[in-house]
Length: 226
Image 1: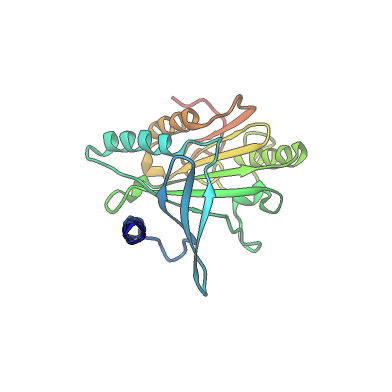
Image 2: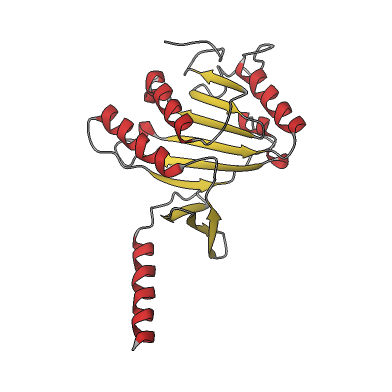
């Protein structure tokens, strides 16, 4: 009898996790289907099959705290209840196309990209976060130096794109990590700044060595905006 009860519990639990899955866009490769205190259970889809894997939570980033605070901010902005869903993926940079993400030196870092979606009717408030980890000081310094160049903060920007992405960007560097928060222009820069502060609160880091602030449409990043 005990064995039957255990089987029923397992089946019920698995069914609840599957029903909690978020919808994934066609291009999304990784989807969070449940979150626990110590780990995130994700589903990874490939062309051939679907594989369930576990990703240990990032000790430097409290995603549960960040989402709860971001939900409150977006709810205030929209004047209605907002509940974010998110997907995690690696970044793929096409060598034949311009992308500021190439500055992160993807081949020399461990990179995760979080896509946050406020749901249908609120898509102008979508945003993403890149979490890049580096194993040596030289590589992270090289990556951040290139981001500074592209942003126009130092030596001018020669890629003809205002700022890093033309939209709102907040990039910080620690000893071994780069965090890059991006939101669309309709998000409004003042709200992007609030979101940036929420990100800082959710990070377990001792110090920020450098940062880049980009306002949508501004040709040069790094200025202090009101």
